[in-house]
Amino acid sequence: ALAVEWSNPDDRTWLFKLRANVRFHDGTPLRARDVQFSLERARKDRASSLISSLAVLQRVDVVSENTIRIVTQKPYSILLSRLVDIWILPQKFFSEQPRPPREIPGTGPYRLAKWKPGEFVELFANQDYWGGKPAIDLVRFAAVPDLRARLNMLKQNQAQIIPLLEPEALTDPMFQETAKVKIHSTPGLTVLFLAMDVKREKTPYVNVSSNPFKDFRVRKAIYHAVNVRKIVNEILRGNAMEASQLTAPKVFGHNAAIRRLDYDPALSRDLLKQAGYPAGFAVRFDVTNNRHRNDLEIGKSIAADLKEVGIQANLNAVGIEVLEQMRDRGDSSFQMMGWTLPSTDASGTLDYLVHSANPETGYGIQNVSGYSNPDVDRMIEDSAGKIEPAERARLLEKAMEVCMNELPYIPLHVENSVLASRQEVQFEPRSDEYLYIKSMRWNRKGK
Image 1 (cartoon, one colour):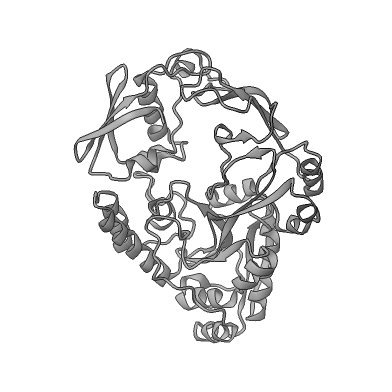
Image 2 (tube, one colour):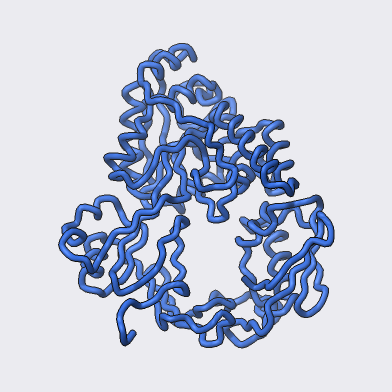
């Protein structure tokens, strides 16, 4: 958005010309050095979760006040989709004080008005936004945990949009009784799946001496044991679709040829017997209770399905913050997690989740399963250098095919983006569940 044009003098060089007359919210003009600083900070700070997005960069040069040159270590066709993740920050806020303030100004259409962490954020329109003044002057994001309270706010027009709507809200009579409020359900980009420790010889929280998840037959047994259709139709009330892989159908590189395995508890029991677990085994099953729609209920349903085939999955429901800390420590053997791809490019899943973990390059930084296949790694890395889209897609699809054949992860479902809104506000719901207030309009006069 901050670049008006870009070009490739050669396969490893990108030249970006910055938009003129862009200012940060404090009035400081945007300069090429701010872009250089932001990219270098994201790729060099070891605490950064964005290292892998920029690991292939060789250097970032300031060519002029409004021109940036990025040189990559090898041809890297997906650079544009990776730059989307990097926010451009004003360098002076980091160079003029030991510790930058929490409220660092950006260049976007809204600027911070008030912020009370855990309660609300208020933003007001940036009058000097380069893209023109937004149509809506003030926006308030409020944290209201109680669903009934949120629905009442919508009914009384104290709230205009409720995002991330829970399935149980869909039966509220309000949505049938008035045309002033409506439900939007859009095919989404978030895939939920089961992750297992397929690397360690001995894994924690199982009641057997070896690691059962290292055996492909056990992983396949779990796949056949889970009734995902029931999850989609009953728990999520149809606002999801069964997943065949770790990407949603809308994603570039999604392999349409991969089919989901059937729900077959009898085959599951037979596979466990073949693997040497005729009586099953017990394991702690880590799930979130505050991250995905009905995640706790989904976890309970999966645990019940596994119990039917002899696997005692002892539910450990925790907040997403706790589960992320557990992942960082390797303190989980079996968990449910989700992954979304706002870039709509399958490399964002394969790079982070499937590629062998490599702290130096940033690949595999979310590979909680410990999965490692050199052939898959090679396909993932080669795909990033392919300029021809069809060749890139072929490599991405093949990498996903091999991964799904080996099952370090078991796909569950793709969430729909579900929200409710009042007719007073006009907008197009997005698959990535983001709310872009700049694109919204009031539907009534006088606002």
